[in-house]
Image 1 (cartoon, one colour):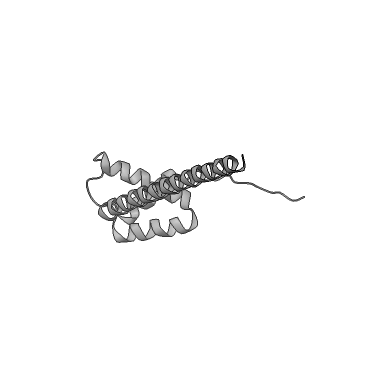
Image 2 (cartoon, helix red, strand yellow; image 1 turned 120 degrees about the horizontal axis):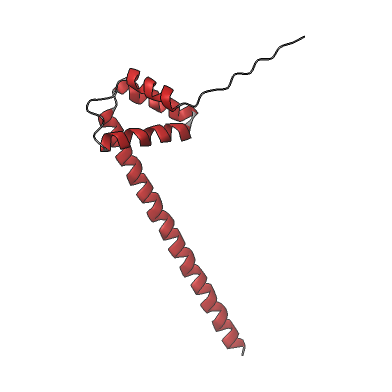
Length: 112
């Protein structure tokens, strides 16, 4: 009986270790896939953005990463659809950012 219980414990532990190895391998594959996608996005941005515009986008990425990611995706989609015929300048990027930035609400405080 003790041998059967020990064998069962070993079998369960082996299955658990195999599942963990599979999960880790899946996470590594996902990380590699994400790195490949990021590299493709960077390459596309290098082609469609002027250096000044790329620098501006990198600065935005430092302060607002989610917004910068959305802008990058928008730019890549525009390029893939063929709507970008020439490289985007800093001024054009500013205009695009102004369109994508949500309007801020103004609050007025009056003191009596």
